[in-house]
Every structure is written in structure tokens, then in C-alpha cells.
Amino acid sequence: LNHAQLLRRMRNAERPSDAETTPLMYQGGSDHFVGPTSDITAESEEWGIDFEAEIAVITDDVPMGINPEDAAAHIKLVTMVNDVSYRIIIAEEIKRGLGLIQGKPSTAFAPLAVTPDELGAAWNGRKLELPVEITLNGELFGRPNAGIDMYFDFSALISHAARTRELTAGTVIGAGTISNHDWSVGSACIAERRMIETLQGRTLTAYLRFGDRISITTYDSAHSNVFGTIEQQVVRTS
Amino acid sequence: LNHAQLLRRMRNAERPSDAETTPLMYQGGSDHFVGPTSDITAESEEWGIDFEAEIAVITDDVPMGINPEDAAAHIKLVTMVNDVSYRIIIAEEIKRGLGLIQGKPSTAFAPLAVTPDELGAAWNGRKLELPVEITLNGELFGRPNAGIDMYFDFSALISHAARTRELTAGTVIGAGTISNHDWSVGSACIAERRMIETLQGRTLTAYLRFGDRISITTYDSAHSNVFGTIEQQVVRTS
View (cartoon, rainbow over the protein chains, first blue to last red):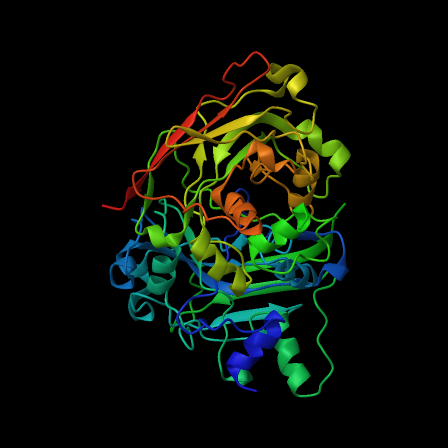
């Protein structure tokens, strides 16, 4: 199976016919974000608790109908998020066809967001070309590069989001879980690793358990920590 | 065809198996709302421009996992919105399975939001029992009652939204387009009228055209205008 087929299996649905021309984007809740060391609080491990390491940008005011070429200039800050997913709940929500509500709790943000000029050569104007290192309970889980195999860059994503409406300054556009075709670098979410394990006939890694600790860090070429580290623990709702 | 089948046809998809126990809710954008007399600006009539008259509530801080019985106390304000839809775009987005982005431009809000106590007997603690009058280009389009045939009341909707995350004060929960089983009262969106026309073998009402004017008003038992009137015109993007 190739990467596109993997994606289809992960979504447990047919791949849309326009997947090569149209980003798969969802509207997340923005009333409540959490910090880099906040707990991931869930009622049950049966929700299929997963992390998703991704790069995000923050825009200024973006006019409606902007094209991808002009959209890049609206990227004012770059940061990193843990876009936590409840996989079992999402599987049910996708069947309902109106997107994700309960499957997406509050997103955790890195300690820092940086202006693109601070990123130097690692920022090509439309994406960040750096590895993102994920550990689970202190062990390396993946180290995919955010600039490799990014099918839609941030300018394309902003243009997509702004097709029929303006975006207000402060809009956060996440690029989705980092994923490289080279599976040897590991994954940025458990769901992808489980799919690879399925294809390889291996035992599936469990989703997160209460007490598990996840860390996400982006390193530049000098091995400096670019955004600070997201470090979260999974905790049962009290 | 009954009302449930109508709903399925309107969504152009199979009705989810859990439709009777789980609300069909989507996460809308909240970065940019518009006022009661703002234009509905679209690039093309081919987007399938439609209005959706609905009642919405605004909550205070809602804890995660709240049950419907306790949720009602978190309703602090009641208002009315025009949750504009681009029907042709939505049909494509539903196929992609991650919900609505481009099909839902900025929502327009009524001039006023009122505290529940001001609504008197029309507010039963969980829904508003008043008719909402919609005109299109000055002619009555529908006058359905927001308290009739509301399958999930606001407490159920808040509980659904807060199942896996807290909601921050100021969260807007819309109840979806008002719709009565008694079709003689008319509709609160063009899509529903078109479905009824389809079932009756009649010519379909067109979606909104540039220049069309829509008004939405809620009247109390003394025929007072409760939230002020939403009056919007459809305008081509300049």
C-alpha cells in the first residue's frame, strides 16, 4: 500500500476524489486552547486518545478569495501544536458527515510562536523544513520532517480556508499531523503507527493510557529548541 | 416521505444510525461574525447561497462532561442568527467527511441577545416557543415556531458539545434551522422548501441571487420584535 492508501485506511473511509486538489481541513474549536504542559484530560481510555504533532501558522487579516501566491504574506507567526484526537469518537463522527466536535478536545500550543524571519533558511516562505521529535514516555516515537511530503503548503491551506470568507487576525492554520513517506523516521501520531503495524502484520501500539507522557520538540540545524517543548500527561477526568 | 426522510434527502447522504440519540452538530468558525444588516457577499450564485434562520444561545463557562439536566443553567443569553450556507459547496464538503469550512461563511447575528428571564413564558428553560418570521424580497417565506419539533433542546446540545471538552464563556450554540413538521407554515431555509417542492413535483425555488433581500424576525405573543430584525442583502464580491 502506498501513502495515499494508508491515509484512506486511517480515515476509515473512501478517499475523496478531489483529495489531490483540495485539502482535507476541519474547523476546530477556538474558545479554549491549553498550554504546553497542560494535562490531556479524558473520561475514558476507550475514546482512543492520540496525540498529533503538527506545525501551525498564525495569520493577520486575510481577505476572502485570496489566491495561494498572495496568501503566504499573511503568515505572521509559526508555532507547533498537539492537536489531540479521540480516534474512536472521530470514527463515529466521520460517519455523521458534519465533521469533528467531540473527537477534538482543546489543542495544546508550544510555549513560543516565532516570526518567520527568525527561522532563517528553515522557513521557505510556505513551510517549515525541520524535524519534529516526538517521545512517548521518554522513548523516541518519531522524528519526521515537517517540510517533507507536505502535500499542501501553508499558502494553499490559507487560500482554501479563505475561499468564501475572510479570516480575522489571529487565525490559526494547522497543517495536520506531520507524516513522511519514509516510515523509518517514525510517526507523529499513534494512528499512523498502528496503520503501518497493521500493514506489517505486527501487534498494534495501544492508544494513550492514563499516566502516559508525550513530548514534542522542533529542533533547528544547530539543535536549538525552536518553539520550546510541549510536554503533556494523560489524566483521567476527576 | 416523512420528516426524517426529508432530512436525509436534504443532506444528500444516508441518515446516521444514531440520529435519534446524537445531535448533528458542526463546529463553525468564530473568528468573524457579522452584524444584522451586513451584506452576504459571495463570488458566485453557483455556490448555492441559502439563509438559515435559527435560534442560538450563549453560555457561560461549561464544565466538560456536563449532563443535559445541568446544562440548562449555563444558558445566559438567547438570540437569533442567520447561519448562511453555500449548499453546492456543502454537498462537496460532506463527501470529504471532515465537516464544513467553505460552505459556511460568517454567521450574522440579530441586533439583540436577551436574558432568558426577559422571554417570560416563551422560554421553557430549554427552548424558545415563538414563531420566527422570514421574508424574502418582502414576501413571507416561512413562519415556523422555534419551540415545535425541536428534537434536541438547548440543554441536550450543550451537553453534546461539552462531552469531551469544557466550553468557554461566550460559546454560541445554534439549534440548526427551524423546521416544523407542519409544512404549511413554510420553511426557514430555501433547501427545505426545495425538498418539499421536489416531493410535490413542483418547480424548485432558486437559491439566493445577487440583490435578494432576506429578513428574519422573532415575535412574542404581544407581536413585539424580540431580538430586532436581521435584514441582509446578497451582494457579489467586489
